[in-house]
Length: 448
Image (cartoon, rainbow, N blue to C red; front, side, top):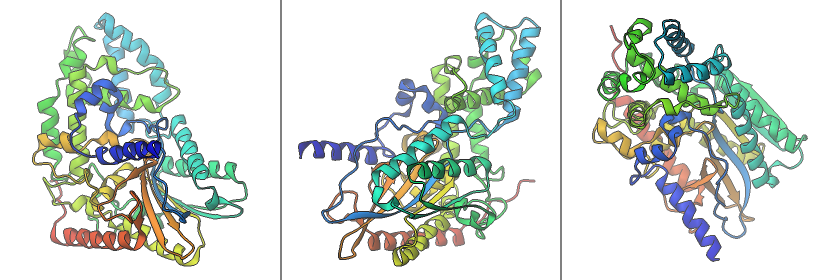
């Protein structure tokens, strides 16, 4: 009993503190520089706690899931090429310091691995999905007996399609008799990526997460100019900083080097990391800038559009509800698997008003105290696991990255377990809030 209480306390701490206040992001980055890379952070499979046991008599019978694609490379070929030009030009002109020569030698080994592979799913991304699928099968073997049916859908982005295939391939290794339907189609994009124009609510200047018309973009660019100091990164590497302007804008070069460095943790073919070339203080400033961008775009967003951006994710939550209603009535599917992107889950947790995540920031400077983008790692996933007893009463629990997550409604008397009818009613009310936000706000004006 004491062991169970300790495990439960640990799980409570993880769920409450994961997005809550009381954490110092800069201290966490000092312990683990990879956290400076925000959403490039890697899913941790090594310390998953035991989850809370269901009430007596309840057994799992259905799972509804949304998962981010696995670990990937940085998305910009231009960034890879700009750093290569800088290193090559400095070397040809004898402008590299000893430290710069060290970086060039190491980057020359990394560049061929990255060149031409921007955005690609990495080997570690495949491995992540194999592990998550294995854990799901191991934790809920009753769901996946015999010819149980699984529905799997992905956005049309290649890394997401490959992620879906990796996950379902592992499920078939666990039980070759499973019946798995897979689809990657524009017909499902309205809820798999509700920030795309496939969602009828989205206007052209709403689309995506880094839209240049977004109200927060000017503040993001200003924050980068105010907080970042390219000289701190490049002065130890170059004897002539005028090379920076010759190759590209210094600020762009710093941001390119940062993004490349942050992404290396995702690629198992790269046996190196370059954080030592970015001073700790600058790591923190880079994190603060990009952390702000994710918060303003897909977090609680109290600073700009009163939640308009996260509100679009109502379509994803509605799909959870509709598919659960159908499957609970028919028993056709053991699991619904959805594969997409981190920003959908950021907004989903805001829509569900998860305590500690949907905390408003009072200012740009306050964002880092209420939101940490590294809490949304590669291969993050949400699992709604459904349980029922012989009387047919249905409970559910929400798992975030395979860890229990507390919801802002009354549990059934057992921590982390909620009556499906209660969560369904709460989610529908929050969807109504999302509709109201969209109706009462305007898309950003198109930049001229």
